[in-house]
Image 1 (tube, protein in one colour):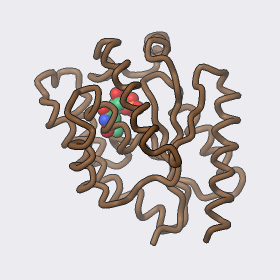
Image 2: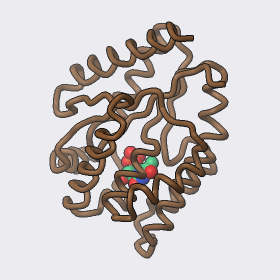
Image 3: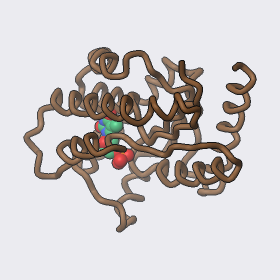
Length: 215
Ligand code: TMP
C-alpha cells in the first residue's frame, strides 16, 4: 500500500515544468517534507540508457511502436526501482512526465492510438497512477521559441519535429485532461515563473492536506 504522494508534471516542450518542479521540490523540502525529484524517461541508470537510445538525434530510423515500447520499458524500470520504493517510504514523488506523455506524444501525435498506447502502458505501470498531475499549458509555438532561446537545454530528437507535431501533442493532452479531469490541475505556463510556482505550490499543498486527512 502506498503511503507517499505521487505527483507528475506534464506539458508540451518549453512549458517550464522542469524548472518549476525543482523549485517546488525545494519549497517542500524546506517545509520538512521528504521529497524525491525524478524524471522520465530516465531517473535511474537503466532508464537513462533507454532515454539516450530514444532521444539520440541519429536514431531517425526508429519506428513509432518501438519508440512507444521503449518509453514504456523505461517507465517500468523507473517505477519499480525508484518511484514505488520512495512512495512506500512515504515520500512526495515529483516526476517530470509519466504515462500522459506517452498518450499525448505516441498515442495521439504519432497516431498510434491512445487506447493502444494506454494498453501497453498498463502492462508497464500495473495500475499505478499519479495522485495529481499538473499540466503546464503553453502555446506550442511559444514553447518551441523558449527552447530555441535557451542555449543551455539540449535539443533532442522529438524537439526536432515540426510545429504541427507539437500542436498535435497539445491536442492530445486536451483529450487526456477531459478524460481524467479530477486528476489534473492546469496552470497557465505563459505567466511569470513566480505566478506559475505560486499556483502550482498552492495546489500541491491542498493535495498534501487532503491526502493527510484521508489517511
Ligand atoms: P523532456 O524534454 O521533458 O525531458 O522529455 C523528453 C522528450 O520525450 C520530450 O520530447 C517528450 C518525450 N516523451 C514522449 O514522447 N513520451 C513519453 O512517454 C515521455 C516520458 C516523454
